Length: 318
Image (cartoon, rainbow, N blue to C red):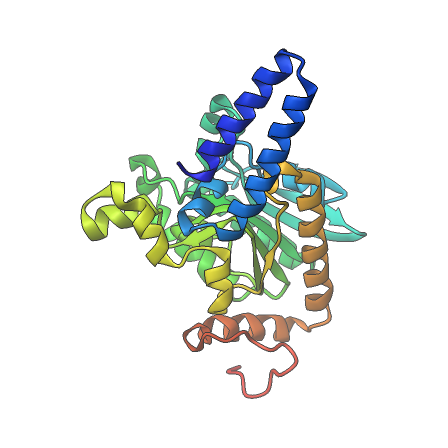
């Protein structure tokens, strides 16, 4: 039995005992849950973190935007085809600094998930994101993106409207942006659908988020022709925040409350806000040339598994 199933079983027992008005029994079970969480959360497997990243009660992008930023004005549409609700974006402020915010949105109910297509964007979603990025560059605003998607939508309509080109165009344009770009992986960071808004100067992951080339189920289906081996795939894919921090793909890990972000969303929002604000302040000290150069050098250096040092820009390709 995985930790989420046991946690659900214990919570159900609490609900039953509360109906019986047995305070002592309820307190005993609550203590049991806390003790179990402390023990279990210290030895999570990669698959456990995948399940936490997908947890139905995990805060979504709109919740993070409301909790992290002081205000937010949403902007709509790609000025070409439609307004993709899988990606939301607009202008907000964080401790007095005006920023452009772009995020992949999942729902909290089945109806909301259908509306937002489970966070899987069509080409018009990525083109909306690019429109907002170029607008941010025009007005010298830092950009903050929140990543939470299984991947780009693979439907026939999306392919017909140029899904691959839209993602590639975003990567091309992001590589040359002259304003700071800070990215945070909130839950799932899947494939090019995540990378299309994730080519940041600095990239952070929530502790129980995942970031990978595709889902463990997809990986297992391709490699072993058996999607049921997803747990085994998760272990070898190196998709957790700790895996990616160790090899220098991300700049850092944002810690979550014991049990996951859904146990104390407010504490999680505060941690994300502090990280994003510190990153923006640090990057704002760089010139436009240094921002572009540092971003370029970061991705060129990935094969060396080392983080780029912003204090040493000498010798970087111009």
